[in-house]
Image (cartoon, helix red, strand yellow):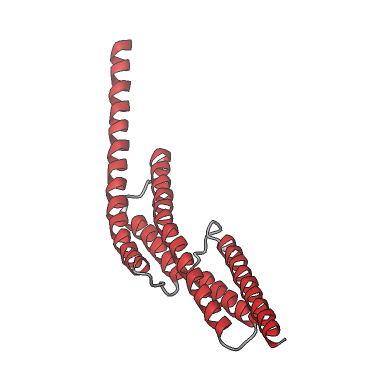
Length: 195
């Protein structure tokens, strides 16, 4: 009698394991479809950035890609139906989807910040050659970078451009310092030739 009971318990457990596996496979299928479609959108952004152009409002677009993907997964994946094991699988897939997309987008974000930094440097150098103060040129370049970097940043606390902003300020100060030294040298040489 105990052998029969043991066999029934094993059959019931195997049925449960198969049901859990079937649920997981259906979630995996929805995950892959959604991820594939989101990657197509990301690839479009990547082409623009890889061509050396900035994506306007990159942060909003990145947020939209992630939110749309999670919403689509939620509508396409089977509901866990109050099953704790299925709920864990479902929640893990949502989390993995968000993290995967965020990682792809974060790489593009860092490339975009580099493009913005380069543009700010060009703006600054150009302003230094025209009439205007060095301070105004630095402020304009910094303002441009901050405005564009903010528009490129997702609503995610891990996305931050403080390091890039600080690096830009250091580079701008260095260029300004060199320009002052060159100007001082020119003035000194002009004074010497006048004497």
